[in-house]
Length: 267
Image (tube, rainbow, N blue to C red):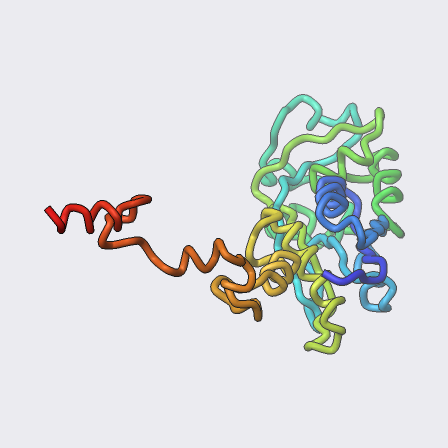
């Protein structure tokens, strides 16, 4: 593959792109790759602004104008102060949180919304201001409510004053790879680099025929049986001429066979 400009990829908290970066460095050492962390609230900003080529995003996202391929899902946990009753359990079901105040938009967790006591009674208070997950955790730490997070995010932002427990009954969080749908407007070599990275993330081997780098090598290799422009006689000299003469059928192809055959005929 031809060299390309630097490939830039962003990723949200909880995603650890190290394994993909390592594979890329092994396979494509001539194409530098930069990975930059971004907040979940701004996970598509760099891609949409043309400042990044691709983004590891947490679903759901607006797919308009994007290619989006799902990669994997992860479990959710509930986070509460360390002295909260949930600390006594290893795992919980969302139904056990019906009487809790969730520090999130109820529509983001319909399984909790549909069993919430305060929503059913019409007594739910508006959410306090929260700019990001860290600020939401500050409110949990202050005892104002609970939070439901992807397990990887809860581990990344863990605090000694908080406890997280595996939560069943809510939809798993999913990670995807997103990049702009340019509808064939990118130069061929840049599009090949994008597709190469997609293959790396999807787990294709370095020798997969679906990888653009492998296809390029196959296209450049001489075709089997292709003419080289030189005759076999000219290339091989006398040895080639002797080879094309074929075996000595009268003598069985052995040295001196012709003389022996003539001698036998005189007897």
